[in-house]
Length: 137
Image (cartoon, rainbow, N blue to C red; front, side, top):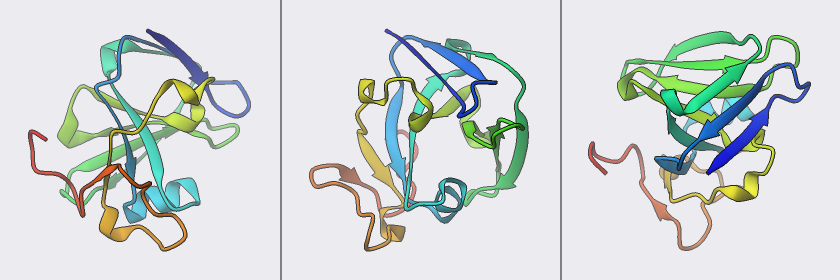
């Protein structure tokens, strides 16, 4: 499977080769701030499967684990394209909304469901973890 996408202005483009490791929704407070809405949908892929063109600017902030989460965005339009949590080395969390065809992915689970706001709840039938799932899940 090949998926393509990019930022709002088109300065940054990417291609993903292969099947995502995970697709999920995150309802943590940082993701709400990043997206300006109630959740963030991410497509987790191996860094080696992601080919980026264009220049990104990084912003790092500690996540709940205390380890940095680096969010990379287009310096021209501000679109966050990918995040890289330090505690998940080698994994890129591509923002599903930046895919050219977001219908190619379906969320498998939601994390930080306990923090979901009443107007943006996880859909019925989706596995929801109240916080971060235990390692290995």
